[in-house]
Length: 107
Image (cartoon, rainbow, N blue to C red; front, side, top):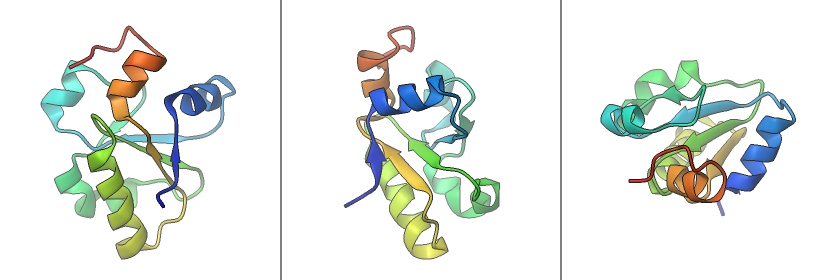
């Protein structure tokens, strides 16, 4: 079972000021259309070349459209790089838009 958090959990943690790194694994045009503020864009296919940019001192929340690509990234990073500080945003940016922040565009 993948470690994940709901959009509401993420929102609460951000509101409390918890140190998190948000990593969006969608494509640049998707990210340009909508994203969570302060998230780092690293498309899924580029993850292997950017592992060193991922935080090791705080939780890293992986984000995509519906949670599938971010789950793939999480699995890869766990198995290939041994990272244990990863969380998948359940439902992705779509769930974030619908459940937490309607100002973030839905597509």
